[in-house]
Amino acid sequence: MEEGTSKSPTHCGGTGPSFDYGDADPFQWDTREDCEVRQILDRIGDKWSLLVIALLDLRRLRFTELRREIDGISQRMLTVTLRQLERDGLVERTVYAVVPPRVEYELTPLGRTLHTTIRALVSWTEEHRSEVAAARQAYDARTPAPGSLSASA
Amino acid sequence: MEEGTSKSPTHCGGTGPSFDYGDADPFQWDTREDCEVRQILDRIGDKWSLLVIALLDLRRLRFTELRREIDGISQRMLTVTLRQLERDGLVERTVYAVVPPRVEYELTPLGRTLHTTIRALVSWTEEHRSEVAAARQAYDARTPAPGSLSASA
DNA sequence: CGGAATCCGCTTTGATACTG
DNA sequence: CAGTATCAAAGCGGATTCCG
Image 1 (tube, rainbow over the protein chains, first blue to last red):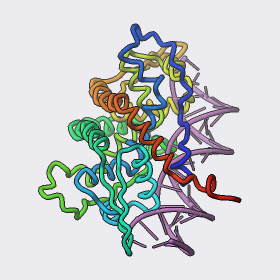
Image 2: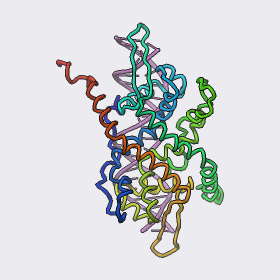
Image 3: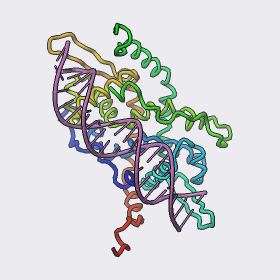
Image 4: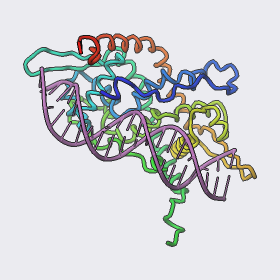
């Protein structure tokens, strides 16, 4: 697991900006604590974690069930994703020592609280979907689109 | 701008799982609307957007100011990030036609609402930081660490 | 100053094959 | 069934250079 064990440092170099925040108290997170916040945000932003969390919030699922649900996912990425979530204490893995191996995954209480929080973000997306779509359309419209209209060649 | 203009499709292939959700009403987002949700999530999870949004939530900033604040960022990624945010209607760009070019960026009302939502996620991270850290430590402890202890060679 | 274009490398992801 | 290991492809981020 080349990317699961040793995570990329991403940014983490910030020692805090010299920006004039005033009291800087409610805003101290934006650059300084980048490292820790980033860990979770990376997980949220990655390709599959969110889907896995959402699915597991519904009920316990086996490896194959998860794979079939998400379907677009490769077994490799499902494994990697589950390992990361397990490592972060968001998912619990249960192995049954039976002849055909049976492994089940379920969200931990911690994982459930995260899912709740994530849903707020998803809700935002739902609510403002049309605004974002409109903004994109407007932006694309006023964008010259390199080499398409005025270009005679 | 090779990755800014044409975003990667990521997943977007799901037409909805055959998973038994029951009513499936409160859960319809988890796989089906993947595409749209993913767009925002990718933005949240990427390397710099969050920092830019946080900074701009404080006040209007010029390109160079932003660059100096974040500092670890390259001018390229700052440009790319700002363009994406602008396209999504989260940031507004104002150009002043003066001799030394002056461009200012500020959060739109839409951008501010997103920032508010994001903060909830950041708060979660703050609150559960120790739990996550503990989980990771425990996980790493019970992980055999391939070829380190029992391996005599 | 603000930004676009190019090149280049590292990280992440996917496909495939093999194993307990 | 549930992984692990390896390989190749693609993505994303960074450095540099040139332009308005």
